[in-house]
Amino acid sequence: MRAIWKGAIAFGLVNVPVKVYSATEDHDISLHQVHNADGGRIRYQRRCEVCSEIVDYSDIEKAYEDDGRTVILTKEELKSIPAENSHEIEVVQFVPSEQLDPIMFEKSYYLEPDSKSPKAYMLLRRALEDTERVAVVQFALRDKTRLGALRIRDDVLMLQALLWADEVREASFPALDTSIRISAQEREMSAALVESMASDFEPEQFTDDYQAQLRQLIEAKLEKGDALDTEETFGAEAEGGNGEVIDLMEALKRSLDKKRGGGAAAKEPSEDESDEEEPSGPAKRGSGSPGGSRSTGGRAPSSRTRSAKKATEDSDGETAKSGAAGTRSKTAASKTGTAAKAGTASKTSAASKSGTASKTSTAAKTGTAAKSTTKAASTAKTARKGA
Image (cartoon, rainbow, N blue to C red; front, side, top):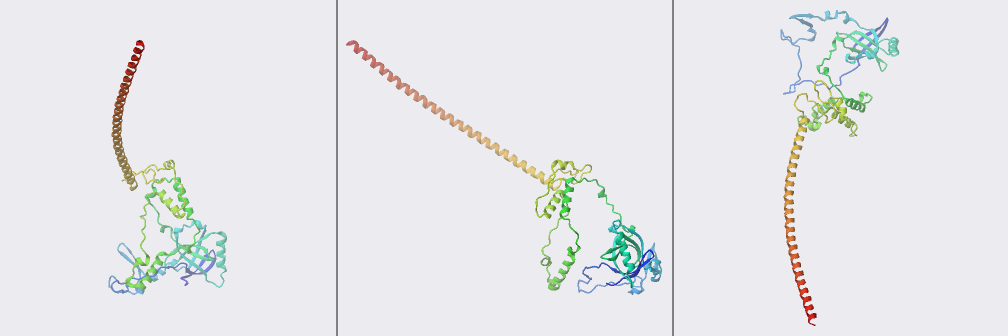
């Protein structure tokens, strides 16, 4: 590493000479612009708008424009600013580290002892360790006065440039002022999802996918030239979701199932529990359990509602068809029953007639036999009288 600045930390009346090094670096692959027709390199030129001449960097000064008036500031005039000439990192406060909002952190620098005896450097480091505080400092670097935080990383003093308070924008989003009710089930399920993804942060586990794939593309282009097939290089492009959450509970359940490897789904909230958590006031997208009631707030029905309506209509149609088929079956059964009754009556009538005929025949035969017996008895009586 090459030192970018030399100075001293002013710790009360103690001076700590240090060298400053950039603690971070850019790992992005460097690309430049070319003309797509012939591959010629595109370079930018500093051309004057007045004389159209290309100007050397040494002949360029800085200027400020205000209401049409231009003020040119020379390098010597800029260097005359007192803060620019200071090579001192002044400690102004010692504060708890949790009071520094991470949004204020800018660039980080390592500080190396720049003296024959690093005792003062070690003393400041030990003071920060013993008090568990961070030193707030002010310093000037590269034409800018900066606020910074001095802390320890791996036994090395680190200087982190901070943004000034007026450089941090205020977040104001009207959507966050809307009253929204979040059910207990949604909170429990989201907490379970967080717990399933909980781990210790290890930066080495993460890689810059874009830069790795850019390197893969460059190597493939070097090998195959214009015959490069990006689909062959990277595979078919995966379809991404549209980012719209149709059902929050369903999305949470599916996320949990995915993390658990398709294990048992989390317990669904009961209908009564969901009803208790329905938002009041302005209509919002429902956040209850899947299939629960949801207010549309006067908007067009959602695709889920239209599907449910169509399913109901289809069900009603099937019921009507079934009813009609049942009516036809009853009519056919009625006709069959009538025919059966007619057949039975016919058989009964025939049987009745047959029975009557049988009775008449039997009676006739019985009567004839009786007459024959009486006649025989009378003849026998007459014979006895004659004797």
